[in-house]
Length: 213
Image (cartoon, rainbow, N blue to C red):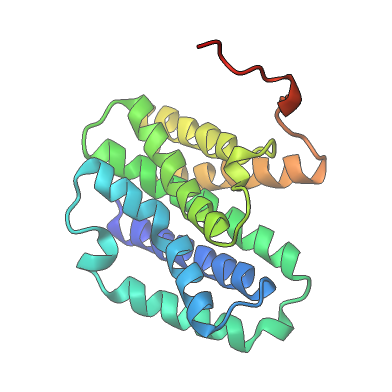
């Protein structure tokens, strides 16, 4: 495994999600502390859940304080240059998508390195990619994207599956990283552009009958 490239992807994902969180917080007019907290949990949320699940203790940002400084600097620069980032919603989507693709890689890689079953590694990829956004949306009082009809976690699963297949075919790690991230990012861009979504199901609350006791 190319540690340098893997670390680079991890840093890129952290930066992308920190920007995504900071932009989301600013659109909701949070104060400086709130902006940093949202940026922080968005950037490290998925990785933290992943590390807890695989028993990696302490989790990566506690073991390496570099991530805290990285998120802090990224958040500060996002605030300073917020007026130069045109169309905040577009920027939020773009950076969220980049983080989604990159963190899917780190999750699958962690599962494989720990000798886990391929399907568990795929699940770890999806968890790492999506849970930062889930925590961000919950704190911003929104229904998380992953629970709505918009295709989000599905893109992670497809990308993670591609990673596992390429890994078992002994494809070079550098190529796997690039292809996996492009799969996730491309799926997100295509489904949003053409408004492709999974089916949703609704029920009128008045039609729900209480159980007979």
